[in-house]
Image (cartoon, rainbow, N blue to C red; front, side, top):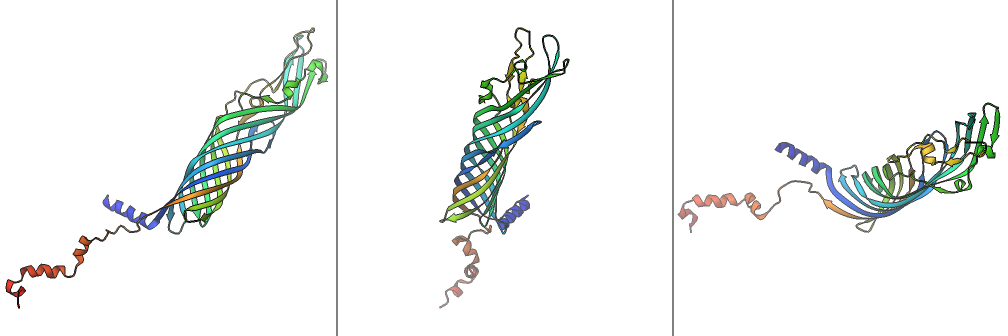
Length: 321
């Protein structure tokens, strides 16, 4: 066991030379893109994202291969994004006389998301000759969320199967009300807990003895989140059957676009970060040789043996005149 410990200590002494810890303060700015999963045609649109970062990176400097370390910290940010969904859905209804009616609803709806969040990274870090890289996961928690939708175009087509007649956007088919065409706040659509796969690449330079400034390009991709909206059986624009001849106008209900179209989301952030770092250095002992002291130096005194041998010489020889 002692041999193993001695070997590990000797091996580390040949690999590790010194360690640096960097406390950094920075800002990030870029774009946030909503990437939803859906069977409909979706056109994502870029939003804005910004962060304030406090980071701590611990580096181990190795011989000839740069510095490897661990990066963590905390950040607070804000982001918004949106997407436009071009949809078309079909379903069957029956009127009060049991006549079959085949409805086709189509149009475009804009879905907007806003959120404020906090992040904690736990990433591997590397730097060498100014080049800096960080890669690994981040945990993100959204402490404020908002989601809304706005319908730009809506079309309702009713096909009366027994009569082979199409009626489009008429009173008998129903119509989307004006309040549904305007921006409408949604319940759900923004997850509160996310896990991101993050990558940052950049360059930093030394300013003074213990300061650094750097610029990095970053990509954060949401690989898992807690989006849990119950999918509903009703379509996005649901037309109720006509209940009688006295009231031939069917009721129309507009549902949540997330629950009607989207099964999952994977937001993507890209941008640039600027930071200022304060560096603290710690040197390792390159050798485990015992420190030289006055007492240990006596062991190597060339006159020590001569002095000890004089004790055994005859008294008259030691005091010969």
